[in-house]
Amino acid sequence: MYLKIVSCGVGVLALTTSSLLISSEAGTVGVAVNQLYSEQQPTRRGALIVREVYPNSAAAEAGIKPGDLILATDGKPVFNSDMSDIMERLAGPAGTSIELSVVEADGNLKKFSVVRRTYPPHFNASSDQFSYSVPGNWRKDLRYRFPLPWSPGLRLEGFEDLYFAPGFDNVDSPEYHSYVFLWWLDRQRRPKTATELESEMLIYFQGLAEQRGRNNNFKPDLSQIRAHYSRWSTGPSSFGGEAATNFKGTVTLYDRRGKLISLYSEVSSSPYDDGHMALFFAMSKEARPSALWSQMDAIRDGVRYRR
Image 1 (cartoon, rainbow, N blue to C red):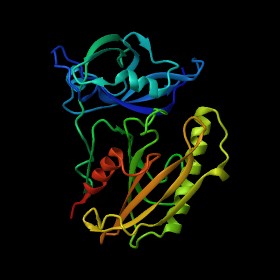
Image 2 (image 1 turned 90 degrees about the vertical axis):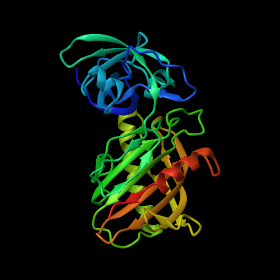
Image 3 (image 1 turned 120 degrees about the horizontal axis):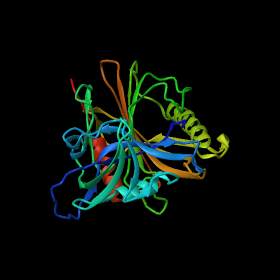
Image 4 (image 1 turned 45 degrees about the vertical axis):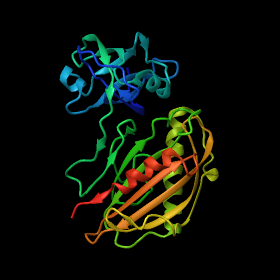
């Protein structure tokens, strides 16, 4: 079977034999997962591969390891299922259970009764020169280094961290396609202008549209992608502990279903005296004010530069 990663989602294998009280809080099952491409499936959507097992989670205690495959949830195969549907099946209140069919690295198939636990927050690596936290029920993606896989034409140095709101994949949710990402850039000693930001976002989202088109069988019209920003004078006065330069605008892009959508976009940035720059991007179809923007503001305002 030929396999390649096409999309990602997050869950926690809270594998335990102890009972938990059912909570009104959202629960997670304890690992980051990617869905694999399979030429043997009609939709080319295959199993879930365990990408990361969170430290001190029930999944870690049970011996789940990166590279294990999840084939089914509650007896329903994940093959040919959209990632958003799978994430809905994995989700549930803390204290509720789900059965996972897992193939381990040695080829053995096991079934686990998984008890969902409340989400621990996401923290970035302690070795970074900055710190932040993100609510645990947001989906965490890989850290990508520049040049980004989907946008090699973006000539920057550094890396990107990316987090998706809980309703990112649900077209009926006000959180649909809402997310935040942080750029940590090298060799940046002056604030960006709105024109530079627009140019970089066009390259970023045109490259992303081409990748999504390849993975989801549609051909994007790159001329339809738009990015418009202007200085945001009433934005936060500081970001990461330094004076902030802020922008507000809109971006028109292709979602994974091949539909053009427009997102509100806010950007806060600060250069540091060691030659680095941090930029925080908040993206959503939802306009201010909303609980979602309050969450994104809290993530942004929690970023701290470690001197």
